[in-house]
Image (tube, rainbow, N blue to C red; front, side, top):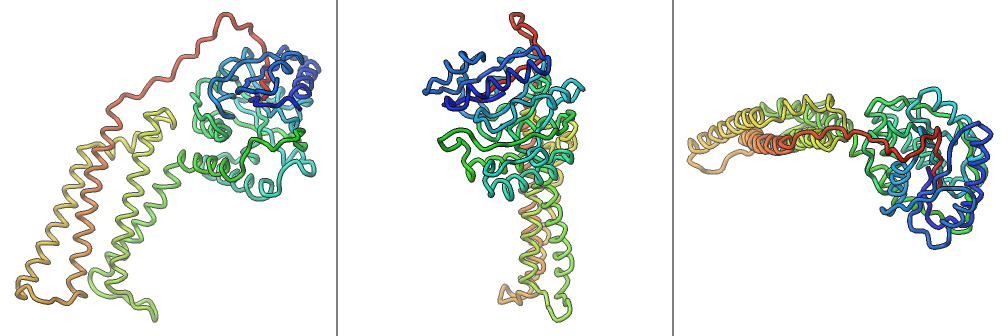
Length: 397
């Protein structure tokens, strides 16, 4: 399925290649063009070439694809760009993989072959490899080597069940990530990439769209981007606080004292907040049906209001007790000048405990607010009776 926005130069070629390939594979299908408001006559060109054209009311790459998925009549959908860069004349590998029962079939341009000048060096050697590696690491997609290939196929009904919603270029990442989180069967097939057949610049903007893809990947993996780093940071900070609260430490020629204790307390505070933010992000993801329910049950138990209030009050009590002890010691000295090397060993951990108590207390409140709204059921997919059943839809854009 391909979104279309002013693709008059290459659209006819793409449609005719796709129709010919479908016929050669013995597939009863159509080419669907999801138009995003073209002003160059692309709609008429597509219809004259034999495609069905539908209007996409939401602007953007994802908006056009979402509309195409909704309007498609086939059991399977293959999407590709309408710039004549993808191998629309060779749909066989995608069709075979879909017929074999795979939910999502990704194209891999690095395995199939990238023609000279087809992909900018920045995309080929930095952007794509880095984002693909990050996607594999964050979501366990070990078998996906080309995370952002624009040519891919999928089971239409299964994809509709995911509730995809990203209107921009990050839709490409959303489809793969949501499918992976839902446990879908994802495979790759080799495909080729040729130079863009258009004379105008592509719609893709390297840094803007690259950042949007990166942001989406990071937001969708709070455990790896927030919880794990926060846990490591908090544990390191706790070790520092535990060691320096009783006196200076020497590590070879390096002597650690109260200045290091300040940063150790800061590490604990920041680390715990990262963990809590990660938990709240996971709960939000569940409520918005972005992540599986089983992945967030633990956080709902840990961040329920009763548990957070209990832990928060205990931390506050410990901090207040330490503060009272420090004040008593100061009073015994007549509230005069004190040696900061001694008093800060009590004051800093006490102040940190008070801050943590407040953070935990209100994190439980926010977590409880997030769970007040019941999780929405997955919408039932109703097949429109006026849709003639076909095996394959190729939406071009």
